[in-house]
Image (spheres, rainbow, N blue to C red):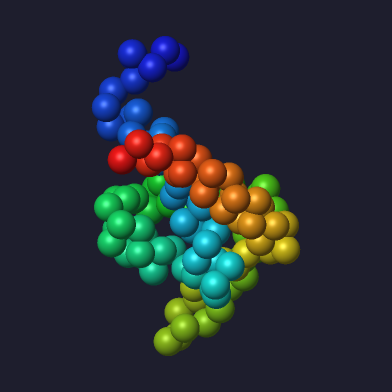
Amino acid sequence: MPIAEISGARLDRDLYSGLIRLHILHHAAEGPIFGLSIMEELGRHGYKLSPGTLYPLLHGMEKKGLLRSREQQVNGHMRRIYFATPQGRRALRAARFKVRELFGELFEND
């Protein structure tokens, strides 16, 4: 689909989806995360994701080997927690280098 045919919201979502994945991976590398907590964290940065968007994203990252999950009992309820795998940590290190380089280019004339 040509960019001209993509609505503004869709274009934003497509542009930011990689940043959202990096943000998730960053927090999962710092420690275990779970759906509601990462939705709130992303919300503080202006990313409003529904569970119907977030959970497939987490599952996709897990399928690619970037995250691993397990169930944990919390206050009598089961919660699925996610954490970065070694592969995910390597991908995050590589992405940090590329993001730093890209952002330097984006803001060099500001």
